[in-house]
Image 1: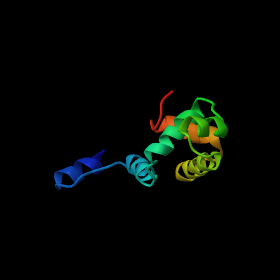
Image 2: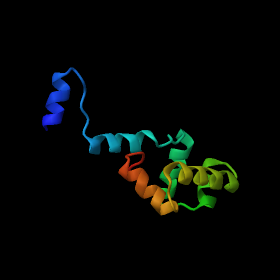
Image 3: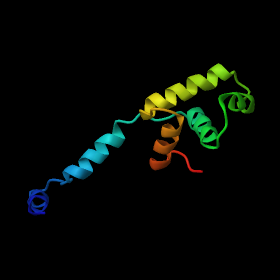
Amino acid sequence: MLEAIRAVHRGQRYISPEVASELATHLAHEVLSPREVEVLNRVANGSSNRVIAAQLCVLEDTVKSHVKHIMSKLSANDRTHAVTIALKRRIIDV
């Protein structure tokens, strides 16, 4: 606390190491495209790639590509993990 007061008194800004770490984590994340968010919402609702492809009028391979990019951007291990991460970050809501 004393460090924060001294920094502010010197005209500087103070951010705790915990907050700085959290900010760095969130700033490092890539942003999902609107289409990726749309696909992720449908994944969160339990839709298969085939169903999502039919709903969006695209090829199933296109959906697979979106899911692959989503998992990469979110550093997720699988579809469920991607949904969990997106919910925690408030990218989607169900």
